[in-house]
Length: 220
Image (tube, rainbow, N blue to C red; front, side):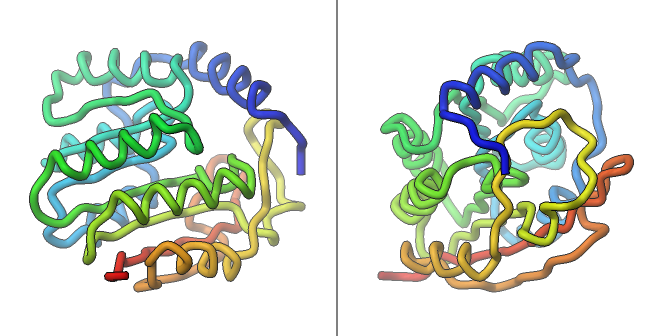
């Protein structure tokens, strides 16, 4: 696992997204396509770690109300350019970092701004943050989401530590799925669906061994 302090992580992602092209149209990740089918009657999708906006824009194109959050100012700027290029409404982008007060507030505001069930979504996000930030993520989600809402996550597991990586070296954790489930349970989440393996998130030569989990928020 590569070590990095938060400032280094922030610098890396700002530099990475500043160099990315504006998305005029892009296929979603496999996980986004899966979640769109599993969202049921959810009208709102809250994406955390939206990156270049590929999945958020996909959700918006398919009729969901979307609030997308990322800690990189460069990423949010590119996402807004992509939204304008695609002439999409019903989607907003917020710059906020997990663990900061602004992150928890953004989640609460996003959730209170919509009636009916919601689906929170985080792809390749948990393994890009620290253990403490993971706990802050679930704490904020537990406080913002309502009973019956769902949270879908996909992340690299311990078995992926030795696999080939296509993207440049940067901070990653390799996570034991049972620990994620335990951590989420502390904040009112139970598992509705769980799977792991190869083939879920293949990109070029990088066939990551990932875990997918869909949680449901229960009453406390």
